[in-house]
Image 1 (tube, protein in one colour):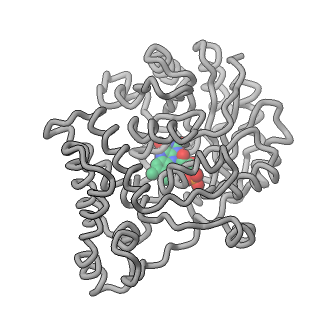
Image 2 (cartoon, helix red, strand yellow; image 1 turned 180 degrees about the horizontal axis):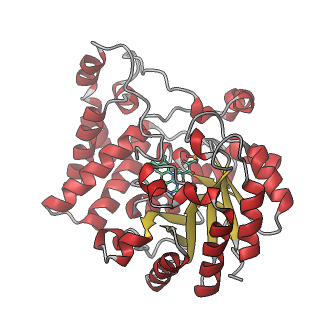
Length: 382
Ligand SMILES: Cc1cc2nc3c(=O)[nH]c(=O)nc-3n(C[C@H](O)[C@H](O)[C@H](O)COP(=O)(O)O)c2cc1C
């Protein structure tokens, strides 16, 4: 039986998104626990330094979980021991990833089709490491096989400390809405903490979902990518609406963490640039959704599922540029952030530079009236 579980507000594991600098930022905003990107146990066994690096924890992170993908108990245990040695505070078994690479190797959501095998991996983990073990489940492999009560019961029996549950089945990926009644039924049936996951973008949706399901805690993925200050909103139970200048200050902080982590030489800057451009595809989706105006609507449909409107060229230059959904612009902003860190620019100086991209943005938006497709919201397009 592994150790008891305590964290209630958790940053979800996200390939590319849960990079160490971004986890640091979320920790600063109040995430109580953070998780690594998923790591294949087989890659660790082959000594992949890249994969090993994904399990590195920053001293700011109070509770850090390493997430592993494994098809067999032995491989899972080897990877978990490595995570433990590297300082992970807990280890999570991924039993929800729907991407082909994971499924073809018998990992991720494939484990939902073999509940007894899932149990065996959980049991091997729980009896081999000294840190808590959790498992991240989806509601089932497909709509006509929602076996979350069975998989969660077997995981509990096997000795995991907590269960994270994303209320969608594997085939759904991100379509439809996350089903929090599934979370509620699991909470009612289990005696270990259940962490609910899916579609939380605002503090009031989090409160409603916790009330509805009785979940011990919540796990936030895309909501944090869009607004990392969501963790502070959750802690304080109120809307925050950082000004565009304040948002730039936050992005600048992330850029500084990136250069600190990846290095500020040419190679480090290239890596940071790629990550910051990727993050820009989520940052641009931020819209102020005050509780007084949007709470009712959120009860009909999760706000994260609502498409962001195109920004209007009548908006102030900075507001307009920050809302543009164009990767070419995000790449330019990423470079400005990196230069800003190196040159020790103030947020106000950077705001002026970024705002000056307005005409270019307007030009880019002209020929096609439709925005780029919604940025990566699927586990196979991180
Ligand atoms: C870019 C991206 C990458 C993801 N990578 C992982 C992963 O490595 N492991 C995992 O268990 N889930 C992964 N997920 C799923 C999230 O952890 C989470 O279950 C899902 O996004 C639903 O939560 P949300 O609505 O708060 O985003 C990923 C999601 C996104 C958007």
